[in-house]
Image 1 (cartoon, rainbow, N blue to C red):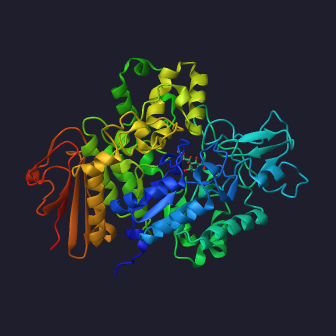
Image 2: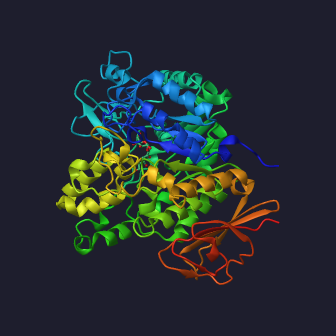
Length: 570
Ligand code: TEU
């Protein structure tokens, strides 16, 4: 008795429309561009497209700062374009999930403009505090660096922004705000969308009295920002007022939630939550933008490749601990899994090898992603093995977070840009936002105009045209594995048992999926070295899938970044 749901069986493909395909030569990806690529998505075999924000926005945070929730951003097209895209996806049996960004709006949203005038009727729609213009109301810092408060001269008061100053936080305590958000959600549900990806949703309820956070010289505890006192009340109300009666996929992005907290979101109506524990395993103790290395001699003397390795160092056992914590932690509820997104660097550069073993490690990562007990989220370009770019000049940076953090590091340490460039190369969200590489023509076939962000230099080698034409490419591996996952319930619903790493094989991952008499074993040699396994795996099954020629499959030794799936079903 399997508890079947379409969204458990689905493979989600995330599109960052600004960087996907530009149909009109203005250098910015658009809805028609996505529309032109719908067959590409269909052939890859994905079931759900999650579209990052396409709403009207001044783009301080590339669409995550919304000026009008019911209008399409000019650069991206029109509502008619959006409707045609929706229909094209639906015609091919795919679904469309829209981003829902309601912790904050743009400071250019009419609500905020009216709120800046205390007599404007919306004085209580955002989080305002009176006080000394030189003394912020509390010690909170923005997730993008710098204070979380900005003093607004027009109103003569401070407003809170957990993200950029152009992203003021809405006041969810105000019922009128909630009602306006629900109205907007219903507008989109009535347009026939298939779900929401709820941006930073764990941030919407703020702690009573906005107390100072615990902080030290080089650390700051952001726990107060997440899962506030009224969060589940708001989430339940939202479900009742909006999506409750629809068969849609609700993806909650919930920074700060652990599996216990996640279960509460599930009870509220959310289907899967997005957590960050498995992302944190490559950051080292100081966190994503830790200044630990900056200005150190190591940084000045080490070569680029070694620095990249250092900044992405990971203990495979830590990764497994994070995956297992969530797998076991949510019990009968369900997880999703991503290894890359518009907020992360490229998975091959981060978790694999983007040089000699780009192809092999790209396929290993596909195997990892598509064989867990969780709905897999693919990020655009990962299916062709795209890599991190070089960021030689600070002028090339577009990411508001990277810009903020680079400024902070430079001013705190008084070092030249070259010293922090390795951080940008290995941390900046821009790495995921370089244009999708379609072919080897100028600008990788992304645009006929001037791209809004640099194209990765490796496009003559890494592009979709080439990948589709080459049956041994990362692309074909994804495609075949998506089909295998679709064909085998055990890969979706099977229980998971973790087999490796252990002390003698610290760099080999293995897990077994079991459902009734079906059993599959996944083995991943997560390193550049060969590894002799002997009979550790007791691999009596047949290798049904892998990234090396299967003549090799019965061998007891794994090749660099080799991935194998054994079928041990009886
Ligand atoms: O991200 C929310 C979030 O928690 C971020 O701090 C995220 O962890 C960070 O980007 C990682 O470096 C969401 C969106 O995914 C992100 O693109 C937006 O910038 C952010 O909300 C604000 O809307």
